Length: 126
Image 1 (cartoon, one colour):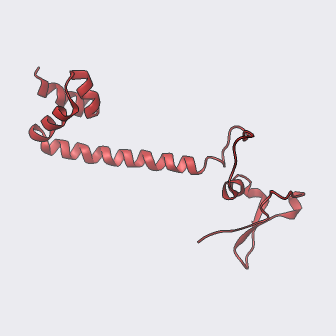
Image 2 (cartoon, rainbow, N blue to C red; image 1 turned 180 degrees about the vertical axis):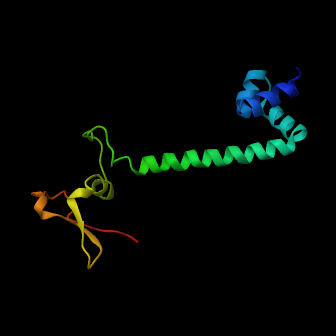
Image 3 (cartoon, rainbow, N blue to C red; image 1 turned 60 degrees about the vertical axis):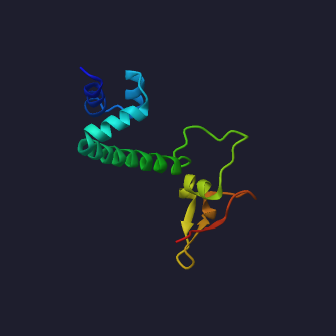
């Protein structure tokens, strides 16, 4: 097989990136991209859109996981780490009640004592 067929097979059939194809065939990534654009333009455009959508889904799921990081902590905070107010409230949501008049989250005093570092109320931004 020629290099063009190898590029086609690696990129479309095996789903490798242009960089991976270039490394495997010992050519530049620009050469791989040029072959894909000149020889297989229609297929390349479709494949590129599909990969963009997959990557967008992957990025949004990672972002969601990182935003919920403190809610599902598997270890306690280290002494050198800190936690923001909103992250603390999310992690301890069961200790807060919503004030119906103001819409603020207020610490439920029936849950126990408080310290000066504990946020007693938090205004949710709409």
